[in-house]
Figure: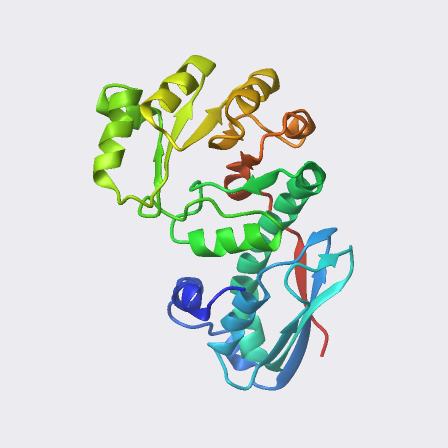
Length: 274
């Protein structure tokens, strides 16, 4: 689920952006109307509450319903219906579609990764590579598609990446700096690109390793060495085409930035029917 607080202001801002001085053409249609949201693809639906909010903020007379979040939908399925003043339907159409198509696209792509990874016990994680100000919504879409959220922000946990290591002057110094900066319950994870760096991070006291851009054979070796001792995840260069090779290594977590930065929009149309 997602809280209305996470999208109320976003929807309000999107409506203002789309019609900052009103919609002079659409406003002339005051009679009641009805419209359908139709899927033009197969995939996972997400974003109904956000789409509904676009119409509800325009008029209390609007009634909106969508299929359940996470529903698998097929081409030409009716995924939603809205009725109310025609002017509200016309004004809310684009904003509702923009949110629903974006979130359904992320949920659909995530579900494809999860379908391959789940039988092997591997979790699919997202990253912080999200659209500015849409992180809460996009990470919600990842959950809807069956994925797992990584940290939501820099405030949530420490993942020492390449530039952090450079800033500190090395892996050992970076881990030491992280320990001083956080409370005792917080995990310190280090991004490494080689098994040698992984060994340095473990020796320095890291609680987890992000295996960055490592081929499957090196990921397998890291799992053999550290799988029962540390939190492990792989990331970088992992796609639907090579995912099977990675999940067969036994890696428990795989982080995929493409879930949120490269998911194609899910094709949904909005059609006035009465």
